Amino acid sequence: MKAKEIKELSTVELNDKLRQLKAELFNLRFQHAINQLDNPMRIAAVKKDIARVKTIMRDIELHESVQP
Image (cartoon, rainbow, N blue to C red; front, side, top):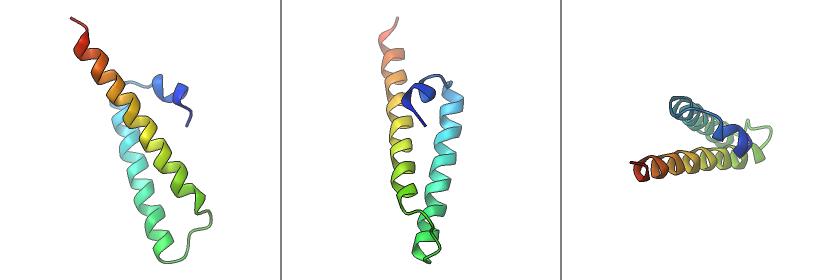
């Protein structure tokens, strides 16, 4: 996902997306462990997506605490 797409999501949707990405990462790691993973670069892409979601969530958290 692009950062622009992630910024358009609500907090609830971000939490849901993060949960989905973590589950996907778990499954990819499991497939990698038993040598059934077709595209190992997908693991890196999912990790980056998780980082993007967490960054946007933190940005929202910081901006909400600053506003009165």
